[in-house]
Amino acid sequence: MILTSGRRMAKGLAIVVITLAIGAAIIVPFFDEMFSIPPPVTQLRQPTPPPSEGEEPQPGGATTIQIPSGASVQGNPSYEPANAEVPMGSEVVWDNTDSVPHTATSGTGQNDPTSGDLFDTSIINPNEKSDSVVLEGVSEGDVIDYYCTLHPYMTAQLTIVAAGEGSSGGAQTGGEGGAAGSTINILSGSSVQGNPDFDPDGLTAKVGDKINVVNQDNVPHTVTSGTGQNDPNKGQAFDTNIIMGGQSATISLAEVEPGQYDYFCTIHPYMTGKLTVE
Image (cartoon, rainbow, N blue to C red; front, side, top):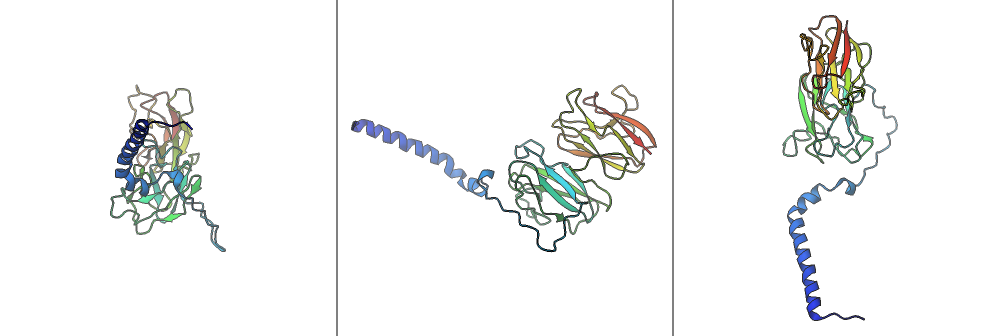
C-alpha cells in the first residue's frame, strides 16, 4: 500500500471541501425553481387512457394547433398558427410534434391570477395530442391569450369568430374553392430563392372571404398584392404587412373586386403567387 503524507492528505481534503462549497453556493439559491420545473426528461409520462365504452370520437371539424419541433427553444416558433381563428362552439386540439412535453394554458403567464381558468390541457407528451377543448363563456371577437406552463416564453392567441368561419390551425392547407378559412402557407425555407414559397401558389376565393396566411418559415414575410416592388398598385388590393416566423395574418376580401391578383413578398420579391377572386 502506498501511503501519503499528512500534508498531502490535508491538501486533498481541502480541495474536495472547497469544490463542494462552491457547488452548493451555485445550486442552493435556485433549488426551489429547479425542483418546481424539472427538465422534461425527468417528468413521468402519463399514459393516455383508452377511450371509454360508448365514447364518441373527436369530431373532424376541430381546430388543430401544432406545437412545432424545437418549440421549447426560446425564440423559436411556439404554436402554429400563433393566432388561430376558432369558430364559436368549435373544439380545439393541440398536437405536440416537439420532442419534449408542453401545455396550452389560458392566460398571459404564470403570474396571471386567471391562468388556466378558461382552459388547461395539462401536459401534452411528445407526439401526442391534447384532449379536445371547448371554449365556454366566450363571445365572437374575443382574443384569448395562452402559454405553456413548462416554457412560459411560449405564447399565442385564439380569436373567436362566427360559427362556420375560421381555420383548422396548422393542419389545414389552402386549396381551390375559396371557402371561408382558406389558407396560404408560407413554406419553411421559402426565403431561399428557387425554393417552393407559397402553398398553394394559385388560390381561388370569393368576394367577402377571409384567407388565413401562416408563415411556416423562420424569417419574416408578407403577402402583398402586385407584381413586384416596382408595381405602382402594389398593396392596394391587400397586404398582410410583415408576418414574423411562426406567426399568421388574415386577408379580408370584403372590399376586393373580382379578378386575378398577383401577389409577392415585399422582403423577398422573388416569392410570387396568384389569387383569383370570384
